Image (cartoon, rainbow, N blue to C red):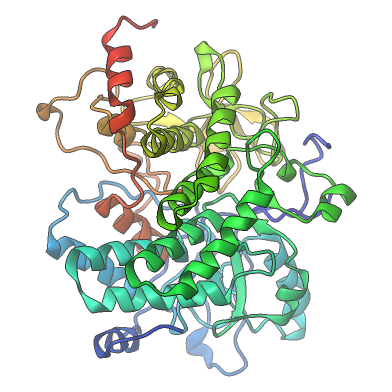
Length: 514
């Protein structure tokens, strides 16, 4: 038995892993008071037990047990509208506001009943198992893992900048104030936070000696607080962001990479886990790099850009060989692809590779150093060659053969994604078409022309998209799907490709190996 891991859906670390308050407007209050319709959404990881009936609520507040059937990883976000007109933006952002908790933040469903609804991370699942039979699981859950509360704040702030609708700024500030209240002693944040109103529960504050670096949790909060400070001038947000940045600096490994989770030295020494090693899984390393770039720009701190550069230099070293020039989700102390969770075998990952490319593009733009462009064409070439069907990729590819890799719950490879461990996004578009389009390439690596059609969207961390025609997955109307949709519509967080565009064009204009 290993130390329980903080990563979503884990109760223990894989034995195969290597051991080594905001202002509000009348309009905002009206919007919040109108939140009455219950809309079911999808969870994004392992299902939690159905929420119990609150002592203060009648039978009308019982949780619909269909949640267990709907706990599929992040909804498809199929065919988001290309229309970014003011009306479309307003409609999309208003949909987010109607799903906001009355105390601020977002969880897994709109207008949820009270109680720990939909929690998937180990500390909250285990706490519920203990407290539930005693009738003491009386907390709500605020979701920070992307697309969650921090990304909602970013898109609302983006929407306010476009529309000047005061409701969106008020909601963004509400979100910022809540996230400051949820900040851990370490300066970071955790994927899910059990709360009473806006205050973390006492038991969680007592045990939360870690901070989440993947799923764009701590990095995403930092970027949002920096953006909120830049727009409002409120130094409270700056101070919260600075604490988060110091945590990111402390968490950076000597190699320049980041692990999945920051833990204090005593915990890492007592029970080492794969979560302490270099990782790209779920935007680990990429997220900290982009947060440090934002901090360097907003706070005029060159030291943050130096740390970000170290991360980019590690990405260049960790890239696979020419035949598989992507990145593995997890790496061992020698820098080789390694297993993570039981169902995440050593493999090269298309989704994570797209996120690492985003980070390199952002670094090249921030520093003007085209050396960060060098890994990009090679990685794009691998992605183009690895496409399963137009607009569709496997998440994992076997080292050496590059065959799609799907894994069952028992950790054994299976033949198809249908047989693989659920919930998990084994296939998707992963934002790869949007990345190629931003670099003026089509999905085959050829030049993109106007006749190709509207460009696909950039996808925020946690939004896997879907393979075209994947009718097995339905579009969700839950909070996280609404947040992902808004981010895709607005292009929130899309990396600037200009500095590397020439390098990419030059490489793809030359004959490429098939």
